Image (cartoon, rainbow, N blue to C red; front, top):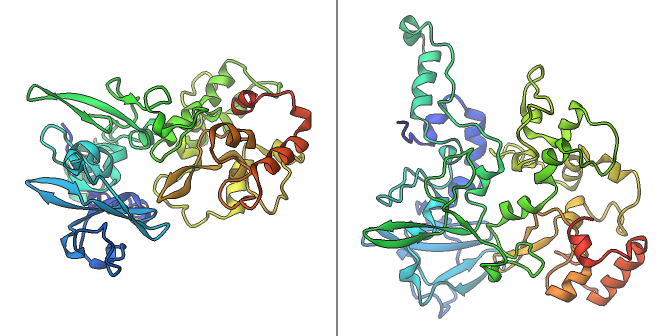
Length: 415
């Protein structure tokens, strides 16, 4: 039975990935305080919300949009009752009356640590590290030492390769294990305990049946009235609604809105296992199993995090959507708006502001603002923030007058 070995064991063979991942937010999402500089909150203002001292903080959650501060009580991690909003530079109340019902073991650790076990509330590492996505690596490490170590090769000449000793999967569910809201239930000492994450998830598998996903039907607080995400940790659900998630399925069932012949070349845009496979080992349409997934756009180790310019984002989209750039399809100047401004508008809040982009890849018309009080593609972020909703509706309808027979529902379904 493989066990967790820790991120540092991966470094000797995977230095590029190790170095890059170390600079991302994932490994730092939950960590012990090693320096007061890691605590970003302003403790000089004597804010009445803050009933604890900086020196009382022993663990930090987050750093980009907001920070939650934690300490240990009787062997369990609990949050303090105020959190610092990095984005807006403000303190806000946090779990003031129910902090005792917010232990990290059931609310946080499944997605903020690596190698978490709900059986004894233990974990191998703070933060999201290599084995959170690749599974426990002890067997893989042993096998690689046999393959690469000269002394081992003396006796293990026949061992040149091993299969299935580590998980390498491009499935979106690997990301979805944490980028989803929902609950799992487990009976502990005769009492049902709810966990805010999937239990015993194996990377590469579908999210287990015991994980009840959040939706508009059971969690109206976190969803807009049109069924799109309103909060963070819901990117996987939004993506599951999108045409991208059905790219291979639609290709195989010949649901091609553009017509034309279907052949293996279509997989360049419709299949991630085709895109990831080496030349000479590409699957055919019949063999391909995986459509577009999170890693099609997001390099999971953060190697490309330094190239997030408008040009690079648009270039990534045009790999498959070149036809969209051959005709004017937006009222905005090309130099002012990138693909994501319209097709992935900021409609989710974290850090107190709209900083989370929709992953449903649907244009949100201004009419949705009027109907659901949500940001639209026209007025997300800084786009047209100085204009009224009525102005946006009028301009949108003027430009898309050829589609004026389409209803709001049609637009949201990409019809």
